[in-house]
Length: 173
Image (cartoon, rainbow, N blue to C red; front, side, top):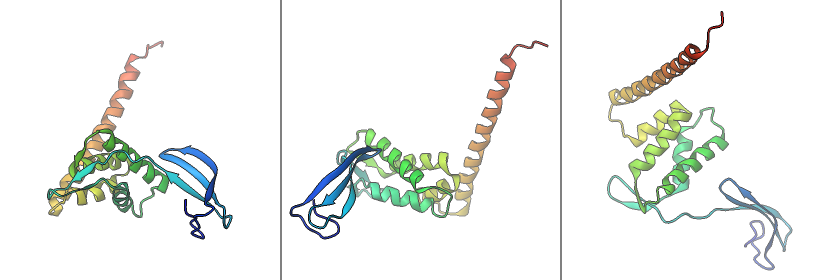
């Protein structure tokens, strides 16, 4: 491997430490020429999944492009970088786990929106506004109303579960 500091390939770099990480192998390397240490990450490339765009074009699935879209949706939101990386990793695993050679861009967008909706509603609306191509304020308002209705249903279900639990408890008084 070529040294990132001096560019030397001979005598090369040696691996000082190697560890499993969440999305591959993390290796600490040391250059034999200049002695600088640096970290590399190795990740298996899972198949050559193609994303079919709305206009019919096909392009290689890009984790970097997905991450850029999620980061942009989370811009200036209280979302840690580690959480964004975890979201992207989960979306990528789900999409590649489908085992499809060609994946419609709508499927990628839907998985990303589902992950963002459960994580940060503002980021979800930002991502959805690009992915669903809202034409006017009314369609955006409908999406937000749907999100709020979902939140109300979830709150109602939480309350119902609590009531059901209270009813099942024996009354000793």
